Image 1 (cartoon, rainbow, N blue to C red):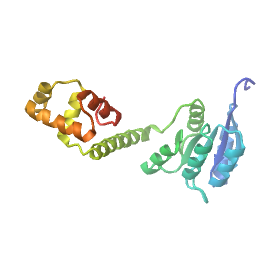
Image 2: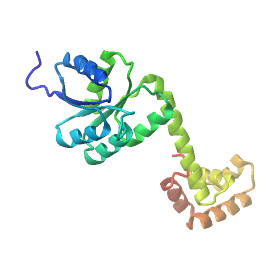
Image 3: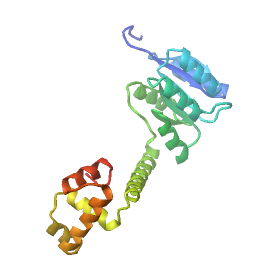
Image 4: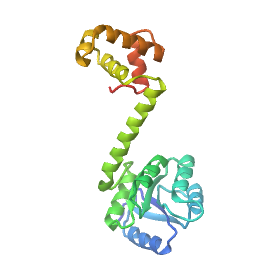
Length: 223
């Protein structure tokens, strides 16, 4: 028996397939700490329920009529950031996953998930954790690395720094002297000084300390 002091996890199920909603309701009805407080068959209904219902978690299908799950997630998270959303989908394509993460989901579950895995995910998210299927985790890290490199490239091009100037900037951020930089990059100290002059001019600073602080602020170097 559920202790009265234990808080129940209030869940809304948003999916355009009534049979799937009924199946999930039956699964969750067996859990004493989880209660379904609403159903939605499209994104519009999900948004309205989120606005007018006390809810902790929304199980959100992606492909629904009218407003789809991604758009509904964006609207709900903008209006009710305290509501956690778990994407419930048949898709494991990367583009869905990354767009949903950017929209603010806390979990991503495929529709062929085992019942206990779904329950486990709901409880994890209710405790403030995030959940992504282990099989998709490498894809997430791959995309994060890609975005990080893209941001670095954009920053470098924005300030018109060359590859060599970026290397020199990285070296001075490590506290190395001109002689040490010259030895590491197999160039002369005079060349290092010329690079520093160009770097200072391009990013609008006057000394090494300012250059390092600027580089860290704009993610131009690894720290």
